[in-house]
Image (cartoon, rainbow, N blue to C red; front, side, top):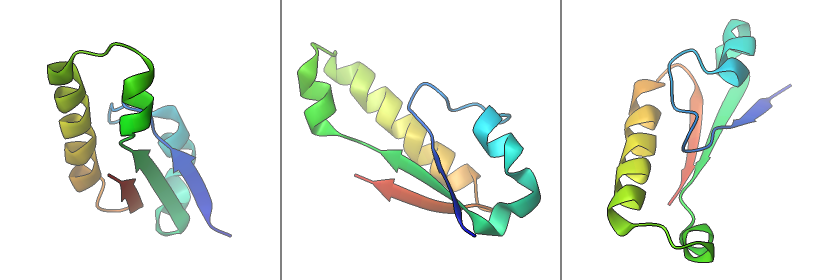
Length: 73
């Protein structure tokens, strides 16, 4: 059975709890990261902060090579 883990932009540390709980079945774990411009328009976020968070999310994707990564941009 495939497990999906949604990782938010403020949860990008290596020992993230949801991913750590799925560590024993990495090949069956899909990680979902979403860059949502609609979400960003709901609050007055600074554009440079959004670029920083979204860039960190993309880097996190490339660092998690043992998981199946689904990134929506």
